[in-house]
Length: 281
Length: 294
Image (cartoon, rainbow over all chains, first blue to last red; front, top):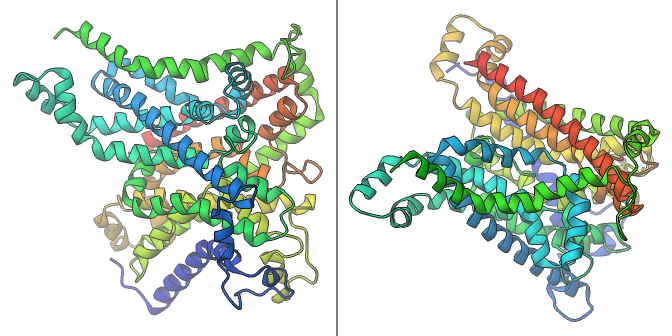
């Protein structure tokens, strides 16, 4: 490697600090707003650090007392958990067999390419018929209906991840088990699926992140606490007449916590998933 | 085992996925095409056949051309800025310094933050009365009075672009970093011995390794930016005076706010066509870059 001058070293550290500040400042401010008393946030000049940390908003939002701000928030939290959970399980149930089939039988690969090409479709191109269809089935404002719609996003993506995962498991291992007398499903159960477990976990996490992040369909297809998701609840707060900005920030922190933790813990797996051409909508 | 049976078995395993995809994507898409030739409303019974009227009305409306320009500006500027900042960040993270691993871990944060939370966060930062941006700029004496960053047509789009870039440049950086780490050490060393300067080293030695992965990132980000809805809806709803209205927001307004399902459908298909053209053009570009990089 090249020999580094002092000036170059200083330049590197200065740039690193700048980058860290750019990344951290907005996130830190979101958290500070959530624990600053309302008076501090409305002060001019603005008080950048609260005189006394105030965690009461977290309590307010997580309380389940009826008709409180907390009730709306906790129900949306529960809906988001239910919908992402169901949509992820359903997506994996479709993706695992399909991913394996395409991986082992490349001649049908074009069908997966067609499924993946739907990524280009803007959700608005499907929204009106989906709205009419859900309405016809009585699934508007319903967690099952929204989970079903989320398959439009989750299923192609997880299938593609599972296919690349199965590609890296040598088919000779399966062949060997078959020669030893194992049937196809026995082979898959004992050999292939355990080997594919890490890919399944990565796919599931990506699917949860995608579902947790989704806003457009949730905005269109839900209308009250029975199905509204966190993203819609936060947009309501941000666009509504809430006078305490700290409360909006608190909702943001709580909604960001699960995906941020997943991101930090699963960094390596997520990055390798992303760099193999992956995306997040 | 015979090949035919293998293929049949594969199709059987694909079947559940294909059935669901036809139900939630295929059929709605066909239905959108049908709707686009009618004057159907969102609720009530199907409308009358009107031929290409929706398309000609939409394409000749000033709303459409203005929104197309806004969307293109948003997509081109955000994606270009994300690419440049992302590559610079990756070049930095590819250097040896203390705290590098921590900094790289931090890069995942904006990416992991839900889009709606990001939009809400920046909406609070830009707040005209209490926002942190106004406070910081006044305290630094860069501006005299608080401004309504999202409330003025002159600044709203730029403010949105900054918020979008902040969330998305780290993804580009991580992709570029992975590509940089694949550049063999001895190649950069050899170019140093040959006396290549920093810029030439980047242009001729490092860039070829970056070109492929960056192209993919560029394609995906451009398609996403062209379809943008969430961040704009939460921050400005397309305002002020429609200065930040994207094509997806125009479709939403047409089909759901004004309940004109037929004309909304025609606009949605125009957007789909534009995205498809973009994607196909890009795919050709990617193949060309991938071919020349190896």
